[in-house]
Each structure stands twice: as C-alpha cells, then as structure tokens.
Image (cartoon, rainbow, N blue to C red):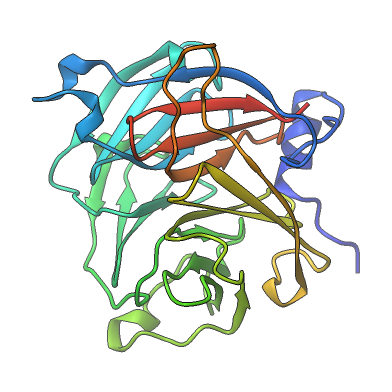
Length: 287
C-alpha cells in the first residue's frame, strides 16, 4: 500500500516549490526574523499584563490565530507568515479558554484546552473565526497544557504538567471527534516521559510530516525537539536536542524567558514562539 504524502509535501507540490533545507529542525542554526507585540491600544493596560498562550496559522500563512490571555483572536497578515504585517480582524471575549487551541486541517473545527477541560466549536466558514459556534464542553486531560492533532484528526496530543512532563497520545475513532470525552476522560493510548525538562511545560507542536515534536515551557526560553521514527507515534520518540530562543535580537531588546506556545509554517522554514512575559511573537527561520 502506497504511503500517503505528508500534508506539507502536498502543500509544497501545489506551490511548485522544492523542499526546504533544515525544515522543521531547530537544532541547526536558526536565524532571527522579527519580534512583534500586539498594539497597546487593543488592551486596557500594557501588553506585559498579557500572554500569548498559543499561535496557529492558516496553511497559506495569511491568517494568524492567537490565544491572548484566554481570548481567541484572528489577525490577517498582508505578508504571509510575517506577524509584523498583522491587522486584527476578530476577537471574542466569550471564548475564554485559557491554555491552548487547535484548528482542524480543513479549518472547520476549533478546539480549546483549559487545564482539565476540553472545548470545541465549528466554523461556518473555514478559517473565519467570526463564524464560530461553540459546542458543549467535554471532559479533559488532567493538568494538560499544549494541544495538537494529527492532520487526519485521528490522534490528539498534549503535554502534562506532572513530575515527568509526559507527552500523551490519544487515538480517536473518528476524525476530530471528542465524543468519548462526554462520558469520561479517556486514558492516553501512549505516553512519553520528557524527564521533566521544563519547570512548567506550556505547549507542544508536531511537524507536518509527523516525524518531529517540540515542547516549550516556563524556564530560560528553552525549546526541545524530539524525533519519531514512526510518524505520529510517541512510543517511537527520542530526544534530539534543545536550544534557547529568548528573542533578544535586535541588540538591546528585552529577553523573553518563558514561552507559552510554538508553531511552524507549513513548509517548516519558519517557526514562531509566543511569550508569557512580554506578550510577544518571535519569528525564526530554520535555515
């Protein structure tokens, strides 16, 4: 049986582009691109009072979605994958979901994780947050922080704030279907212990081809990378390495010591880190 082409390869083929050297690899020599803080006028107080607890993008990089101190926001980017070109197009204070969010690969479903509770919603128009209708909340993941799914929606992952900072994998019967959580909180199918690398884990991310996973936490601006020999299978995961990305470039810029989120561009050539201290989105290139 022929193996299905990973989503990022499908995207690159449609764009007529070649593969990116060092795609999805933070252990090489990433290059700082820019740092961006949402305009102060959006808030009642300064941006330091807020955190970027999650970042997601539309696959073409023209829309950016933030969890901003629990508020769900959509920003349109005039330059794809460049947060400094962002214009706020939607925010909804009614969806105060806290720790993490995820948008399905077709842009029709959105999920939130707030510590021990999972929430979901449907988007009437794909990728347009103003058309969201919220469904019922479900059971959750005890002390869960980050939230990601495989592109086919049959696997869900989170990192748990416990003694060993476990990365947990849940296998779903149907794509993006959380109905098992209505009655109870299912046990994970697979667990990988990160060895408590983070003082407090905040988020995880997975590469588009399912061969790499990343974790960030509230200590010293560290990002860790893990390789999966079997795509999307945390039982095959091994620690690859880590690095510090404090956003202190350009010279004199204040450092960002604790992270709330990490995500990648579709082709893996860029990654973005959300800060907990200074409400900042920091962009790097992987090569």
